[in-house]
Image 1 (cartoon, rainbow over the protein chains, first blue to last red):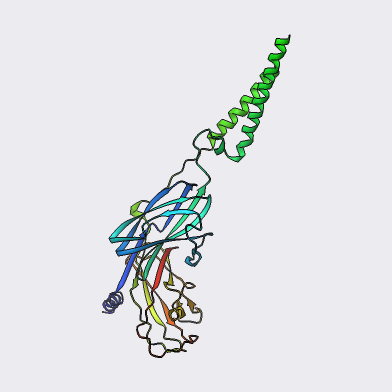
Image 2 (cartoon, chains in turn cyan, brown):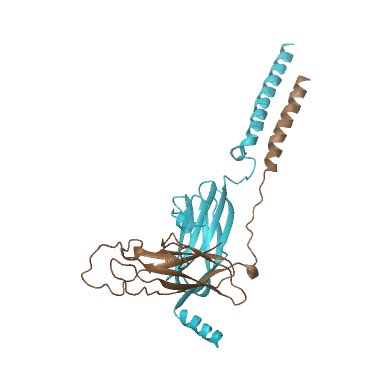
Length: 169
Length: 158
C-alpha cells in the first residue's frame, strides 16, 4: 500500500514535467587548424528545442565558466539554432577552428526549464602534412633541409671550380 | 675524392630531411562509442514551480524541487536564471538540504549531483528553492501576482 502511494505521489509530482536527453554527453575531437570537422549527437525530447554553444578558455566542469562565444575562440561553429523533434532526433554540428591549441565548449540543448549539455573538447593541430612542402615541415627538421641546401650550393660551386681548373690545365 | 665525400654528405642530409618528413605523418580518427552502450544524459524536471506568497522585506518559504535522472550516467544539475536581470527572481536562492551544512546559493553558484539510475530507470533527487526579498527595497504599490521567471536546469555528465 505504501509503495502504491509512493508511486502515485511520484506520478502526481511529475504529471507536468519536461524530459530532455542527449547522447553522447562528451565529444573529444582532434582536428587540424582550418579544417572543418562534423559530428552528430542524438537528442531525446519533444517539440522545438533551442541549441547554443558556449566556450571556456580552460577546462572546467562548471557551466558558469563557459561564458565565451565561439567567435571569441576563433572557431567557426555550424549548427541549427532550433530543432523540432518527436521523441528522438539527430543534431549535426560542424566545427572549423582557425587557431591551434586546446578548446573547451559546451553545447546546450534546452526546452522550457530543462537543458542538457554536451562537453566538447577540441585539440587543434597546426596543419596537415600533404607532401614535400617546405612550409609544412616541422620545426625540428628545418635545420636538416637548410644544411642540405647549403651543401648542394657548395657542391655546385666546387664542381664548377674543378671544371674551370681542368679547362685551364 | 673531396667531391665524392661532399656528395655522400649531401645525399645523407637530403635523404634524412625527406624521410624524416615521412616519419611524422599522423593518422587520426574520431572513435564513436557503440550506440548500444552510449551514455545518455537525460533529465525530467517540473515545468513550473510555485514559490508561494513572499512579502517584500522577508524571506519566503523553502520549496522542495524534485529532479529525476532518467539517463544512464552520473550527472550534475545547475539551475540558472534565464533572465539574470529580473529584479525579483535574481533573489532566488537554492540549497541542497535544509541543514546548517548547506548554505543558500544564488542561481549559477549552486549545483548538485545525481548518480546514474539503477534498475528502476530513474533516480530522484531534490533540493530547496526560496525567494529572499529581505534586501529588496522597491516599494510595490499593489501585489505582484503570478510573477514568472524561467529557471533552467542544466544537466551535464560528470
